[in-house]
Image 1: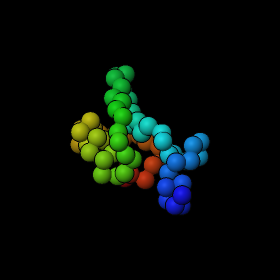
Image 2: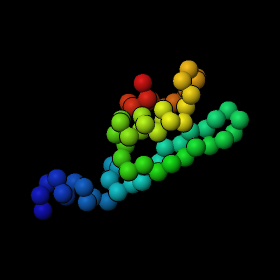
Image 3: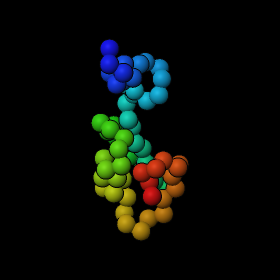
Image 4: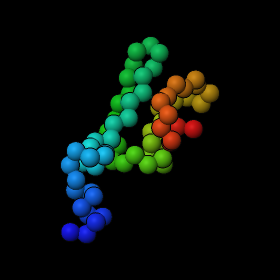
Length: 67
C-alpha cells in the first residue's frame, strides 16, 4: 500500500476518520453546533462568520484558523 493511503487508513492515530464538529456558545446559552466535512481555514471561517456578528467579543482556544 502506498504511504499516503496507509496514513489515511490508520485507526486511532491523529484525526483520521473523525468527524469535524464546530460549536459556538452564546452568552445567553444558545449553542450553535454543526458537522463540517473538513477542518481547513476557509471552511471553518465561513461557518464562523455566518454565526458571529461583526464586532463581537470572541473567546476561543488556540486553533490556527481563528485569527
